[in-house]
Image (cartoon, rainbow, N blue to C red; front, side):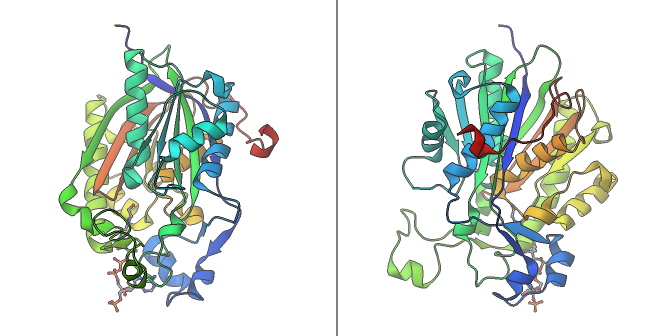
Length: 345
Ligand code: UT7
């Protein structure tokens, strides 16, 4: 079998227009801009406006990605969507997104919290490597504000809404996914979860009154897990790719908390300028976090053809996922200025 790596040939993003600043939050919960910036690095985040849904955000990002790749919906063989904030409990978001894009291909959803998009990328890569599919849309989208308890200052300050998508296709060169690690530690599930609204604790007045339909988090435990996994996963995937962490041109860490990234950077002995950071603008967009950072790294010229990036995500599960990827000829060769999605509809 002629195994080909999957390389990125298109990319796009969408963030809601509405900005929620730290000062805005300080009017809702007992917090301050100083505390949030010092403890997380986050300055503002985007939150949905009335017209934004998980589907519309994913579709807007996907249109940009397909435009950059020079493809239409008819060319897409598979859509993989990483998401844990669906428009409806059934069917899964991938089906709505497929329909709105006008695609006829299979579509599947991966719910792995903030690690979801790297899981989705690795899943897509397998289909490319076997030759089963040639053109895959890998989307990370999260409308997480709907699941936030805006009376809980420990969680509501952290997250934001957003979407990003890439097209992957078989590489003719050595570009593409070079190594990966996927992980799950379900023993820590209750450190980051939504207690109510599922089959174990169905939606009821009691669930709503006790605010169990919102995200609950043990921040300190997740913080420790995140630092450990960011460090060990980056070491593991670079070793597997036959290189060392310092050989990476750019590290794209999950955009959860600047202190997590700084602590990992110190223990990896890497300068902070090796890490791409955009969490000050968007907060933690969960499954959209890594692709949103990847797309902005490409748009800003931080990643060019031939460059190698190490991406590591962590989050609810608790789960983690990392991949090393070399950028193909398309990256850096295209004017990536995004076209208004509306113009394509
Ligand atoms: O994708 C994965 C998603 N999750 C994460 O990445 C979360 C990882 N964890 C974190 O980022 C941090 O644990 C937080 C930012 C959530 C919290 O920071 P921390 O430095 O671990 O604070 P803490 O939980 O130890 O709380 C310290 C103090 C507490 O007050 P007392 O008990 O010392 O009086 C909290 O009540 O800070 C208080 N606090 C706040 N104060 C002002 C917690 N949240 C806030 C807030 N504003 N927003």
